[in-house]
Image (tube, rainbow, N blue to C red):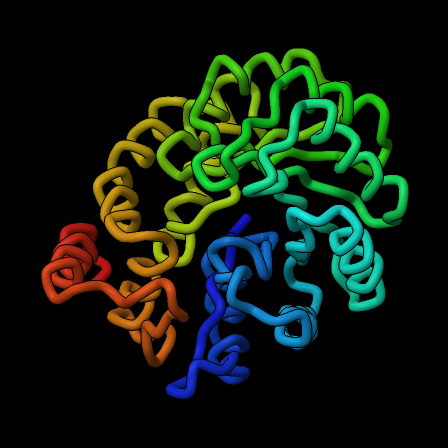
Length: 288
């Protein structure tokens, strides 16, 4: 899965032409699911209407080549319910619900938040745990309870980097509940404890390599999967040298996939030094 960036034009509006071109690029380079209007898509700076427009664009551009997951979660339960219900009519295949940020709810509050949305939703739900951004951790026991109690909560994007917690979730969740790495650097370790894959940022640039790594892993060629994982780590680290998605947008521009690397404030574009590092990383991998 790719957590897709949102291309902007020179006026910082959603660039429809570039959205379509990016969807085509991702479809042809190994991505089988797009996560749209999430953190990597700069969702905090997208208006409600822009998110709807973006989702419609992506659904149309994908031409059913990939599944589409819409980021509909926020730190307001009522707003999350309303937005989740609204996108159900856009042709998306599921929704991504981030743990509420800034509020710092208890585990009971997290359970109640996600269960309320699940009870009101018809689409499959992927939970998203990213403590570094939200200020709270969705505990393994809470995730397992939600997976058991809500039939439409079917997956987790886990970006805690806590392999012990991830293993606990995988071992305790019901059959059919899939756990995905939410951090590119831990993709192979998460697969090793029973994960289903990754919701990736680096797949914008290394989609084919990541697809090959997954194919090797699931076919039992552990050595080949490990080799691909190790080879990609330096570039993966480079793509996170600035707040996401700043560096990956710079890489996409350098590769000619999108026409510019503009981001909305409070994010700012890479510095000249950072751009040089991204350029060197792409060259080292033979991509530029």
